[in-house]
Image 1 (cartoon, rainbow, N blue to C red):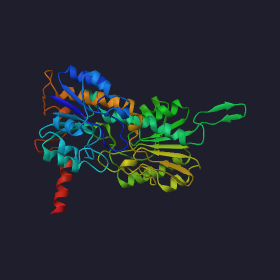
Image 2: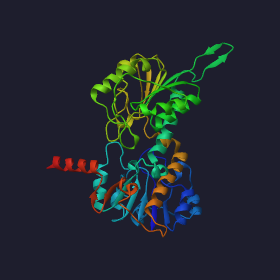
Image 3: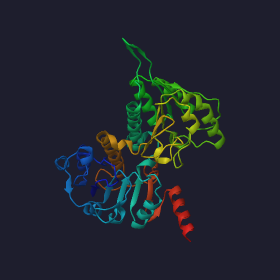
Image 4: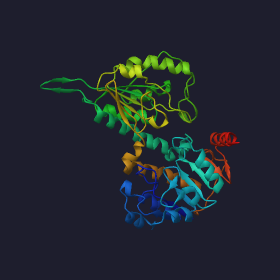
Length: 391
């Protein structure tokens, strides 16, 4: 079987699905690999390195997509100027795709194309949070990078030091950093801000993360609010009621007001980002303070966030970054490559042949389309709704 690695075409995407060191492992598994020329350029992997690892380097994006039995990507397939049509339309009917599939805006249209093309597609976002899947958890790998980079962005934008400094001219007090959301990105943000010398506190609707926050040197913010069973499947936060969200906003007001930096990471799978920092809280912050909103692409945790932009309101800088993992493309590609190849080896037996066990949660959970059907229930529902609206 032939495994294809096309060049990513989404603007600003510098990652690649497979790095040369992983190509060697795939070839050793008995699979052939074809890589589109320039696919690794954004992550500083030359075509020669892929060739030396055992891959065939192909200049035609069309050929990479149409010849491959298995396509490995980072971003969801999209309209490709290089081939003059959608990437899915160039894929082999009956082939297999492993990629992130749920870009902001949803996966319904991509899923429809994959279904109609007869492509079996797996979404890396849907990897189950079970022990066997930890080495395949690309969301955690990318969130870790995003949390780290968010702190560096905040430190660069803040017109103050992060650490406490004792100088001949006097003592500089440390910056106060508030991290909202203590998932993978939030925990890495806490650890990074502490390493830079800031005083860090963090809030999450899941009380169970308190010990993790404190183990990293942060202070867990405990609010007098009942969040019920706030942890859903896979350890993700559940959406709270409108009343609970409003109470959280009010109780966090003082913590936000006193912070020099607020980093928001709160997301609920399949839902718009919860609104946490409203204009009144932002206006109460000191001039020069910074907010980095990692939920910007899902609508933002801050009321004034604009995805992909930096705005200044009431003297506060609000940064809404897009695709932070791409800004650290070398390590992001390395980690994603390990995640996606480990999953590939789960799908392929030792003879290099596909062996899909749909009774295995690790195979079933990320499966979006197969045999002309959409198997991921929320996406199928979106497609059904869209069809009814057109009738």
